[in-house]
Image (cartoon, rainbow, N blue to C red; front, top):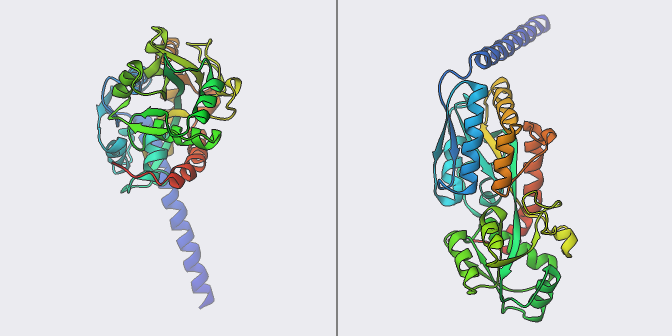
Length: 333
């Protein structure tokens, strides 16, 4: 009896090994022939913004490496969760991936009741760009730098106003983080997007904003608003005159509007590797890198452009932001 059980176990082990080898072989064959048709890049936000424009430039350069068009599809709604959800449910064959990041893969799961898991239902491809925010203020605000802004906020509790792109957006969460970091209290004014908020800032209707440099730099350049700091560890290549938050007096106030590419869970590793190689090649292109500077974005260092690096970075961002978001009890509109 024991001999029969042992034989059955050995047979099952052999079958398992054969199946694993067949699956691995199928994955290799798929990668060797992949891609055979156009690939869809889902951008879960409206067309025309810096994220969309940057994604389209990278997609066009990826076409050179992959030999197939990358079709950019804007699938908008619910703070990006509709587009991300579509990719989470897509076939894991390498023909669909999503441009994810801070809103879709960090904030949304802490605020919304999603039908997918942002960690378990995606396969990381590459960490791509970061768009640090600028802390900007109306021209008439009585402060000349970030220290002055914080001092003014402390002297005027609950009187100042920060414009945000809406409830649960990166700028909203950044405002909560600033209050916690500096011990200040001010109103958070939600708008339907950063554009209207920025218009009111220029008009002096609100006091300040924390918004990506890609959105605010034109108004800073034209002298319509003041920039006090960039929310990253290093200065912007396109605006080296603006100090970092560390230099300006609020050490560690890092707000990263990062993006990474995610495929559906179960996408074969050889295909992920092929996509990653195409992304890495695109990010190394001088024209792509210059456009990133033009958009107020930074490209992550080469060693951080791997699937494993994206997975680790994603987990670290969740660990940092979820306690802040949940403690604030943010509810969707």
